[in-house]
Image 1 (tube, rainbow, N blue to C red):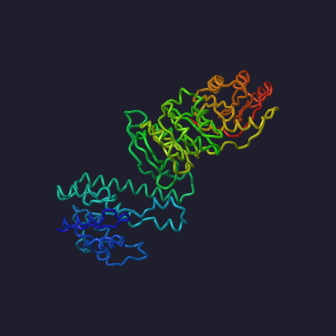
Image 2: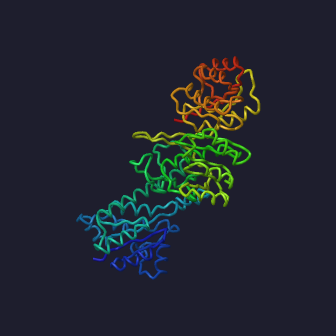
Image 3: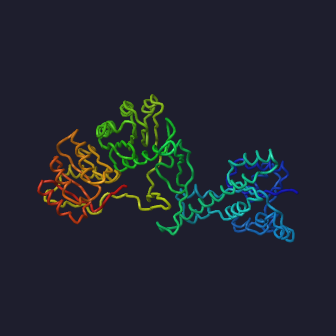
Length: 503
């Protein structure tokens, strides 16, 4: 008995060749619209779907396969006598293979289109046929990806038909695709940041060598509808990226994007270990390096401006995993070639994150991304900070937003000199940051805290070590104690009204 294949594809890669193969295996071919035209132009003997439905395409092609003669032929259970009797009574032939891929909604969702234009890329008939075929995987082969043509051809050449395991796997691939497709559409239409079901559409970008540790397998996925700096980054040289590389790259790039001025950030183990801004890139790098010349070894360095030859040569003096920037001079790239394993990453897109997600066992925490610095900046002490101190306090606060809590950053002249991170109490973080800073500088230091001071101990310790100005969110029941301590020590204190915990 001759079998039937229905072909209706948006991506026509390889479809004519695949159709000719099916013909060679005695398949009857039916098709729709642009696919039909493409197949005819390539010498394929194919019938239009209206020869099956006995009804013309209508509404500019919006309705062409939504018909019992199509879906009955797909959904009929071949082992069910009643199903097959119904097909015979209604004069419906079985459809044994469905080759469909969807309107390019993913690609067009990223463009600046009017909603009425974007809606035209929402496929209805395609997902319906795919889902019907996938449900009928016991009898029907469904192909939603041109990359699977060769798999199907290989099995049919060998065994005459596709195996049950392959049909099952292809059906699973369909539901994986259609769920992502629907998620992408809902993302574009819903204005609710926290809808009843949290569905986000991601597509696999690459397999990774392993996860955080060698015994953990991993892959990297990127959003299908939204842009982002790490969605389309370009690796210009070096070893393949790892799980930890991508996480640290994300952090380093977000830190330098806090600044309009020339900035450099060094990251090690998901923690900024050096940040600075300066008039030129080389000086910014040197200052970032000098914050913690030990930790930067084997770390990631990000720049927010084009990397020149002199800066590249300086970077090459130590072992780095990654150098990332929006642009590189040709001379700089030549310098980096001397370190063949060094990953050189070019960022092509702006930051896009608006939401932040953390997976927990059996759940997902979702929140707005932390994009602001302050809500109500004000001086709360008798002593006003100087303009120079205010500038350094603003710099330190932009850095601290990306440091794990409890977090303290000590800075001077727009250079982070000490970073206290991840301690279980604030005084330990302050001690860590101040003592590291004082190894390099002892005068004119300012301090930033990611959260309020529950006690005056941090202020007292900071004063003892010569800190001249402090910025912190405020909001503690004991705020006045810290303010009084700052007044006693002659320290200027500024509050932001905005906490920046990062766990």
